[in-house]
Image 1 (cartoon, helix red, strand yellow):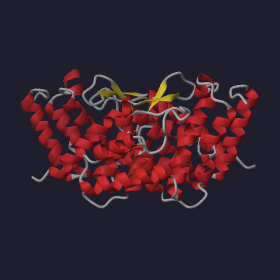
Image 2 (tube, chains in turn red, orange):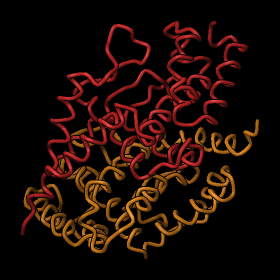
Image 3 (tube, rainbow over the protein chains, first blue to last red):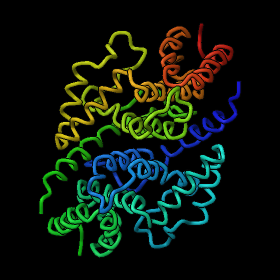
Length: 196
Length: 196
């Protein structure tokens, strides 16, 4: 029996279980329990399926699903970086690249190469698929924070301008979702859960 | 601005956050922490991407991803049923069907109908996509239990025959993964973590 390829794939499947232990700063909806990266990735995948029709340009949904499902796997090695942490780089760090090579490298080389490329495509944010995937990644915590009286914005004293500048990336994936998101930010200011 | 469709979609996206609270009986790999349904669904989606090439017949990967990502959403209303619990029905119960109608029914009707159909297709297990999705759903806890010294098999005194009969469904999706799984069951018996 020739199991060698399957054995590599199963080693990868077991390794990525660790994503369930990587805690994010944002909390579940109406909750004080932190979300982990596996839950977050599942939620972005569901959002992709449901919201794909709002993309600015037609997108390859399967490609976007792969992106959002794998986008945080490098954090098994590199850890989660809080988006408003100004002391750390958020771009495609050396640490993340090493993580990608180690973890995806557990797979047979054709699959390893495919997933590293998809991860880099997501990181670079240039293709329509990457723009849409990144807009989902920005939109989920916005919804969570508004459900949690400001959530991490309140907890870490992040003001409207900083939030706006990060969230504006949603527009590159979907201008209609961005209109909704912008309204939500304005409402948050009115409610006093996001400071100008 | 016409947000009504988007508002329905966002109501659904917020509602399904509850999947993160539905605890399964099986534990994470090498762990005593229970897995929740959102983590489980993410893991099945990753397994689908990685293992699709082992399917007995060519499969529509996007369709299988939708299946595994949504397959447990009805448990938000119906709760998780332990696979070796002989006191409860595991088929497509009335409670699950009501859950599907309520939760997917939050979506615009075209999407609600599509997801209810995909969920029923998974439950019925007849198409190639459903057979493969169901094989992933059986394979993940097998890997987890072998990593946890028998896991739920040991905890709930489930013997080899019962496990074998449930796991044999893997073969309908992939005979090569089933060969691997069968070996793993035999090894588990040899190691004494699964009783004949």
